[in-house]
Image 1 (cartoon, one colour):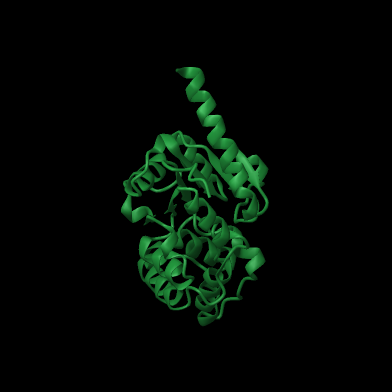
Image 2 (cartoon, rainbow, N blue to C red):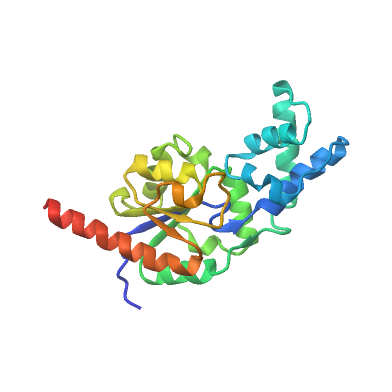
Length: 236
């Protein structure tokens, strides 16, 4: 295999991009709702809540279920949520089809891989380890390991730098508006996956490429790399 991606860094979102996590996240939410005699939410109806952080999921999940929300109780509720979620982090969560094979091929071609997620770093590491994916990534960056969270471009830039990469030779892969906005702010092209968690149609997110299956990612990256090289040559 030719190491033609040497020097490139690919940054991945986690929830809805690498791993289908909604069943376990909504499972924790539903256990908390049920404990308070509040009707639970079907995963399909609640998966749009995923991807904006645990507190946002909890707050909006309670409100959409018809429960009263008291911001003063948020710290205790968040602690309860995180404890339950960590204990059940990979009961139903699984990598999307083609993820493992694609990560292996990208690494074999010389790319450095990292994770830039709005999920807290310890939770992200626990999930990735439980699924046996940790060997693929140079660094896993939740918002607590960088100066700002997505959609701020600093999240992507700093994650790439922590992985030992150069943001000028990086590509973001994600499923939602925060990923695309952070990539644009960082000056990094973004591949959007169509199978994640976004209330906005994936084609309308403004990414540089759109894929329907992880097996299509290599071709999308190759096209973006060629485009970057062409732009550098024309500006030389």
